[in-house]
Image (cartoon, helix red, strand yellow):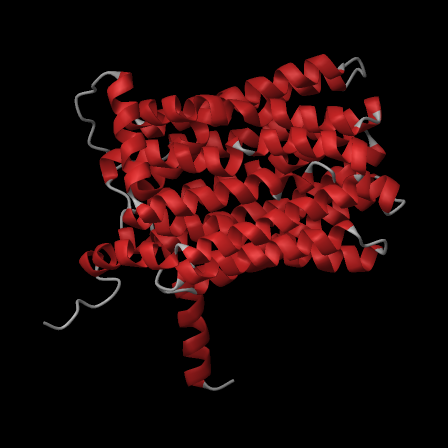
Length: 430
């Protein structure tokens, strides 16, 4: 390799990791990377435990519903408080509460006396915590990165972090469940929260958010809703994301059924399936991190909705593990592109004083609709089978992509002046 090629390669890496220049983001990235491995271990262990105890597709869906429904119900109210409170302190509190929830699961599971109602109640508690944690984390991102033009890179690196841990966590969970049981996954998860808590406490927030005098909750709720409803880019991006999350994302809830009944495997197979999806998503995030601008991401959104929908349809009817793993690579790529591209555009164009409220709607669209999808997927899988359930969900994703394409002209016209003002695209010649 010559000097020119080496310089270009180093420059590419430097560009792809540019958000790590900021100390606070480096701290968060390191702490959260360790913590998320534990989080994914708990997710796999939780679904496997419920399915092992009950053998019920419906209860598998109900557990997913309990952990995610608070994000939908509490999302708008959480957004108001995230815009009112110090987001850094909110994150410290939510991470401590999440750690306590994992330790509670471990205390019940290690002696083998945990029951399904206890799992559901603790899942519901974690869902309430997540309803505040997710918008706070998204809204705090500009304070860690400081430069708006580096926000898309930070979002892509966040996606890499989530999916790198998603690649490691499920594989470790499969090994640990077989060797020692689900309780050890919960215990490791509880310990892993210490990493992100310490990283948050070590931060020095040099650009604190501007806290305005709060109005009534009802007034701020209306203001946030009007901002979302009146903005074509925000409105349409969130609607497509919500649809895909409702009918497509719950494919992960049905993974234990595919691992056992469809593919004839066990906990190891479940870990491999989830890791394959995570690897596809990790590749997607790496591609996003290499981009220099959000320009062009709008075209990506409907394209990856098609990839995601077609991927879960094909996966649903695969009976061969190697093919299923390849299809989950494709599905994971489409899923992560959909979420991260939507997030990047929204974070770039939002008004700062409404960031918490809009990101709460983002959380509702991405995570808050999943409980309904999980419940519907569990109900449908029990009646028509898991493969047919995924086929219907994938087909609806394809229809959603077609609808979004029909709205692209309106969205582009609304984005153009914002991108021009931010210097993302050049101003038109007069």
